[in-house]
Structures are given as C-alpha cells and as structure tokens.
Length: 253
Image (cartoon, rainbow, N blue to C red; front, side, top):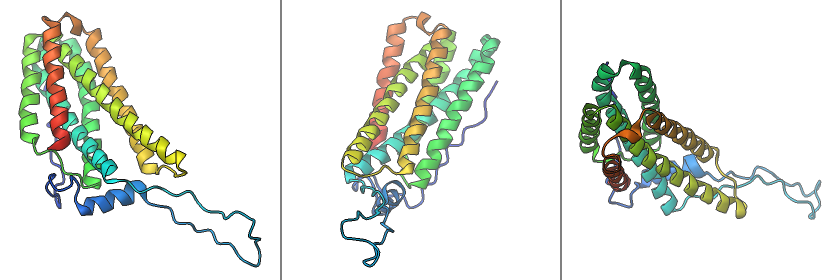
C-alpha cells in the first residue's frame, strides 16, 4: 500500500535570514500581536460617581514577549514542523514493504500516518501564520527520513517498530521540554500579575495532544515487538542520536 503523497510546500514569502536576530522585525511585531498583546484598560472612573478610594475596574494586562521568548517560539515551531515532516516520510517509506510482508499491520500504519500528517498540517499552518522561517535543511531531512523508513522496514517488522520506538521516545521528550518551558513562562507572568494570552494557552494544548499521540505510537511499536529487534540497543541508540542531532540543527538552521 502506498500512502498519499505528503505536501511539503510551506509559505515562505517575506522570510528573511535566520542569522539576523532569528526573527525578522516584521515577525517580531506579528508574534507580539498574536501571542502577547497588552489588553488596554477600557474602564473609566467618573469623578462625580466614584470616590478616590474605590479601585478601578482595570482588565488584566499581558506582558510583551522578550526577544529570547520570541526566539524560543520561532525555533519550536520550526523544529516541530521539520520533525513531523520526517515522521510522515518515515511511515510513507515503511508502509509498502512492511504491509506486503505483514498485511495485518495495514490499519495500524494508516492510523499512525494519518495522525502524523495531521501534526504536520498543524505546524504548517502555525509557521505560515506567524511567518516563521522553515528549516533550510528540508531536502536533507526528506532524504534521510525516507532512507531510514525504507531501510528499517526491509530489515523486518521488529526493526521498523524499533525505529518508531526510538523516534517517538525522543520526540515525546522533546515536546515535554517545550511544554515545560511554556508553563514556566506562564507561571512567571501570573506571579507578576499578567494574564496568559489565549493563543499561547491553545499552543500548549496542541503540544500536549500531539505529544500524547506520539507516545501512543511508541506504545504500538512496543506492542508489535520493537524490543525484539536485533541488535535493539544499537539500532535504537543510533536512531535516537540522529533525532537529537536533527532537533538541535533544525532549531537553528
């Protein structure tokens, strides 16, 4: 079975070099507007109707993002989109040889692919909306992900599932780190009397949902004998190391 061809076209207009403060001035203003607008006070106190002792009815305000926080959000969206691209290509390459040898895996492979494609589309929309530059290494990651998927599938069901186990172990931890950083940011803002914008709260919900689906794939892989791949420690170790390297590079390039 071959799965639908993945669309990897992302809006790139008005994208500038990552080596000039990581974010263009235009994106800085856009992400400031979307993620951290300060809510103006619309409360007025009439001198004739209110005493000076009465508190003003001022809405909670939102703290502007620092450059470090904007850089973090930009890098997070960029690397997440690159990772989900790789995941769709791994499953696309694994499916034909794996399903030919093990037809009962067809529904599982289709299910995992569909979820990864949904993740990829989510981050495509987010980086286009906030005008984040995608990774410059799209061609390299595409070739490497396809090669990894095909080679592990040819090695057998256990090796293909060990590949999923290794990738999802790293990706689950990666999403957890992003969620933790955002929650620490929220806690600091709230301690200072600021409110957290709805869009950032929604981003955390999205990351949690995607993380949980990635960890579901990890469980499926283990249930389908990922641990029986030989040599398991070497195969998963090499793949995990490659994932960590790809994450580090994609956050920056």
